[in-house]
Each structure stands twice: as C-alpha cells, then as structure tokens.
Length: 220
Image 1 (cartoon, one colour):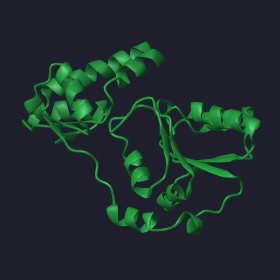
Image 2 (cartoon, rainbow, N blue to C red; image 1 turned 45 degrees about the horizontal axis):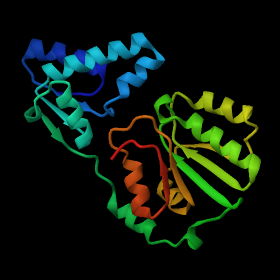
Image 3 (cartoon, rainbow, N blue to C red; image 1 turned 180 degrees about the vertical axis):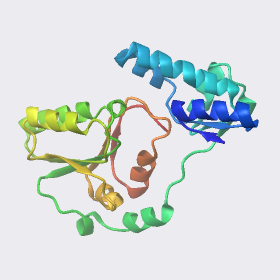
Image 4 (spheres, one colour; image 1 turned 90 degrees about the vertical axis):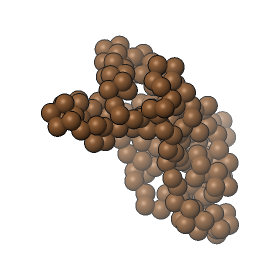
C-alpha cells in the first residue's frame, strides 16, 4: 500500500492495522516545507508536521526524490536503511525533439524578451514574487513578456495581483499546455521562484533544452 499525503496516510494506517498491509511513504517535500507552512498557519503547519513524522516511523519504507531530502529524514531520526532515493524521470524522447530546434525556428516574440515559468499555482511556488519583479522590470524597460504555465489554488490570487500591477498586457496565466516543452525551449529565460522543492524536475528539463535558468536555491 502506497501512501502519499496526510489523508492517504491516515487511511493507510487504518488499513495496515486491519489487514496487516505494510505501506510506503512518498516524501516529496523539501526539508523546510513544514517550517514554511507553519509560518503561514501555525496550526496547519504543526498538524502536517506531526502527521508526517508519524508516517515516517510507522511506514515500511520511505521514497525520497533527492539526497537532500534523504539526509533531512535522517536528521529526523529515520534510519537510512529505511529510505531509498528514487528521482523523478524525464521524457528524453520529447526533450531531444525540442532541444534539436533552433531558437529561430521556435520563437515568435511580441516583445524583446520572453520569460516563462512552469509550475503549480500554489503558495510555495512564490509566483507572486515573479509577477511583481516582471511588472517592476517592465516599468523600466517595457520589453518583457512573461508566461506562466500550470494550474492550482492560487490562480485567482495571481490574477488579482496581475491586475493590481496593471500587467495584463505582458503577464499571462496560460494554464495547462500540452506543448509546454516547446514554450520552455523557445523562451529567453526560465524563471523558477519556488520557496521549497524536493527535486525540481522542470529545472532539469530547462537545462536539457538549453534554456537559461534563473532559480531560487531549491531542488536538485
């Protein structure tokens, strides 16, 4: 039985007791995620942290996405023999196709510079900072187009911020995009402002595509 998240963990804990089934925890948060969550909501952060630690100790094994996460689990008192690192894979076939395209073939700029982010629209991705920075930059040079690909619970909040910054002309929430790799390859810069990241698959993809990256110090 595989448990991912606190609700599945509670269910897994119940099932494991009733049917004697062992479960694995997928730990996909960067080590300081719960501290960040606690700074936003003390109750929520503390509750999730307690549940997570309970799941670490009662699980059969823990999958971590990076060595950093594995070391953090060890600091929590989890034996290293219980943790296995299994990074997320990337689709090399698709990446090879888009990486083979030249910028001239794939770029169609409306403005001088084209910046993209690919992210879930959630608080820990810190997209408010990205939007405010791009809006400020355009006040000075007015030559940047910024597109954000992804969906999530912060969408309405981000739309309101874009309106507040009067940035609707050059900042766009594009939602889900099936050809997002082509958008990443075509861009002048890949922007990643996340506060916490256990792995950061999109950073690997941008690297493979040869797109310059500006990122906070998280992931990989």
